[in-house]
Image 1 (tube, rainbow, N blue to C red):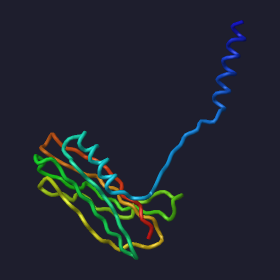
Image 2 (tube, rainbow, N blue to C red; image 1 turned 135 degrees about the horizontal axis):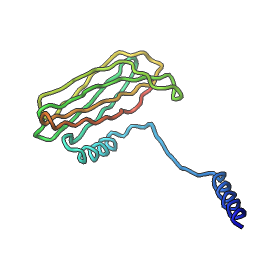
Image 3 (cartoon, rainbow, N blue to C red; image 1 turned 180 degrees about the vertical axis):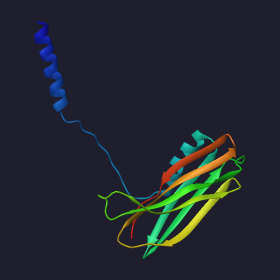
Image 4 (cartoon, one colour; image 1 turned 120 degrees about the vertical axis):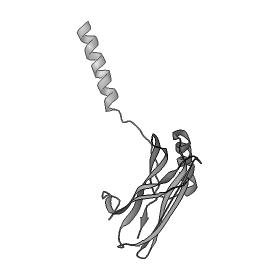
Length: 153
């Protein structure tokens, strides 16, 4: 009887494993800055020193405009961007590859904005990643990461 019960349970589990699991996922490459900024604001509020942050890119021709902003609590003495990396790929099936980067862009105040226009090669998808940084004192720092929208040039 125990052998039959074990076999029956195994058969039932095997049938459940063979049934397809329906998972619905929706994605969009569209950039909605107000939505991303609101999500980032919620995340930053939980963490501490950084109040709001965002990174975005815009492209046309052979120019790529990069814009990043960070706002911190008033007690922050240094804030900015540990690293901004521009990445590119030929198509959506390819992996992202680092194209160039900017490191350690800081200000001795509680907010910082960064804007730069660079010349790039057309025929690629581009995006930017950023590591945002805030420092209150030697023992109190915060780092957050974000990825911009994707543009095809």
